[in-house]
Length: 286
Image (tube, rainbow, N blue to C red; front, side, top):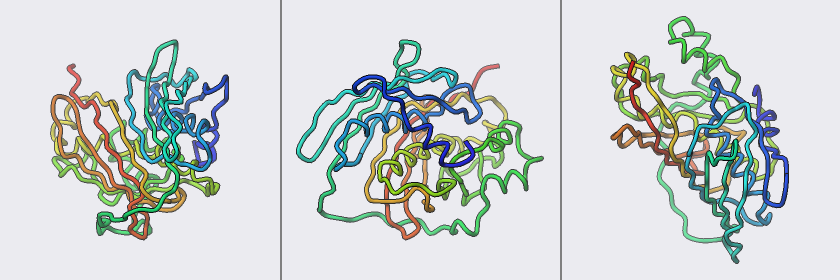
C-alpha cells in the first residue's frame, strides 16, 4: 500500500448480509494479517451499523488466532445496544470458520462536559526528522535483514521516529519511544475515516517498545511476537493526514508478555487518543 487511498480501499468492506461484511488483506511483510488492519476493518464494520450522529469513543479487542493474508475475513456485527447517547457493538472476525479476533466498540454523540489533559512531551518537530525511507537509505547496509525488509515495504502511513532506537541495534534502552505519524496523502473530511486510519496506525511501534530494555538479548536470539489485546480511546477531533505524535512507553514486561501504552497528540499539543496493548514477546528456542 503506497498511499492512504490504498488503505481506504482496503477498509471499504463488502456488505454480504445484514450486519455481515467481507474484507481483504494486504501484507506488511508477513503471511499473517497485520493486527492494525483487522482492528481498523472491525471498527469500520461497526461504523456501518451505527447512526451517523455518533462516533467511536472506545474499543477493546482481542487477537485470538493469526489471520491468513491470502484469505478474506468475514466480520459479523452484533447490535448490543442503541441508547440515547451511547451505542454499543460487538464484532467478530472469522476465517476458515473460526474466530480470529473479537472486539467491543462504544459510540457516543458529541456532548459538552469537563475538559482536561496531560501535556505533550517536548520533542523535536517532524520537519527536523527523517522518515523510514530516509533511514533506510542512510543506514540500509547496517540494518539487520529483517528490519531492512520491513522498511522496504510500502506503508500507507509515514513515520518519523524521534529516537533512533531499535532493540536489535541499540543495546539496552529505556522502554520509551516517540514517533510522528500521518497518512501518505490527503484524506476526506469524514470523521469515521480518520478514526479507522488512526486505529490502523496505532498498532505500529507499540510492542517493539517493550523489547527496548532487552536489546542485548534480542540481538542474539529470534523473538516470537504477537499482539494479544488492544484498547483505544478517542478523546478529541483530529485529522490522520496531519502530523500526530505517538508517545509510547512500556511499564512492564513479564511472563512472556509486554505491556505498552501510548498517548497521541496533534502538533498543537492536544491529546486526541490513547492506546494500551499487551503482546506476546518470548525467545524462540533453536
